Image 1 (cartoon, one colour):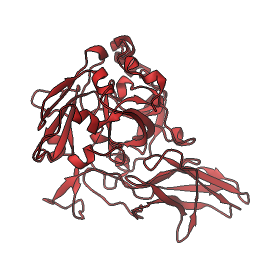
Image 2: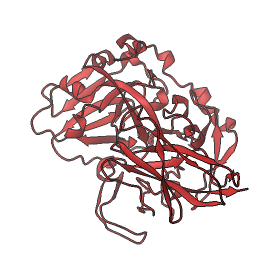
Image 3: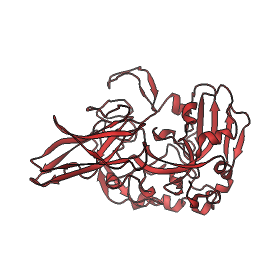
Image 4: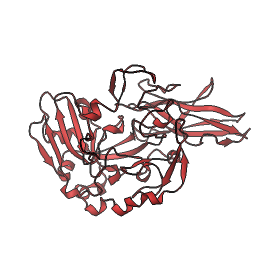
Length: 405
């Protein structure tokens, strides 16, 4: 059932609630607050923080225009849902700072029986309103921790978040136009535009079988509120279990393809090696980054924190299974491991899940302790980094050291 606040009429709310004030954006650089150390081994590690972005709490600033905002890890210390004001922000190109919802249209074309141009009311009427809780994670999350260093945004581990997404199934929107025979992929574009002439538009596509899944959405709500403009108002694609590069924001075009997608962000980038590589490797085959692997994090204690010698210790954190449900989490050290207790499965297979472990007595320092997640398909976090030249899909066990005093 959909939230009553998210009716069709609420979906086409006035433009005043869907705009970023240009003066506010222009002044953000002057309002940067403190600094945070992301612990990046390969380069400058300090980043400014700011509460100045509209609708945002304190965020780590990777870039102002177009915005790249990272979630501080302490935002994940409690609960499993990331509030809208703490969800990371990632845009490839500038986007409109004002969207008039009543005028917005989504064109559905390509290999269809009858192309259509849909209003937001049309999209909302396309099918059953459903909600899915799913993790939205940048493919480059944790890239800044790669050794050797790789190019791209030097994220810590905060380019992720978990939210409740509400909308209609993509397949029901496609049905408004009718998918033609021979269809292979479904491609999406939004209102963001390249910064320079000749640069490629941000366009992404998924195979038809993914597009027709019951949990792949055209969403208008995030945590029971209309999508914030920083997160793609008025509509975005949601592909649970897949990296957020496919979650196209400010959706304006849906195109059905009968062949492979040769656009830049599918055929040329957001790809990684299909064979093991080293920093010296050249001319290796690549495949698109798609599904997420499992990951787990300690959120109760930061690296270098002190713990009480001789006292009990409780460690806590979050974990997820990636493209499948989480099966288990283990606390791992140098030559030892302890199973963790999983919290309730509140939100389904694509969500964060809490874990905890009770240690009866701290006998000394915990050197390089971490947590290892495994999903029900058998995928498990590796002990060592699987390096690739873009720093994609990091899921090595993240380790910290705790000092006993």
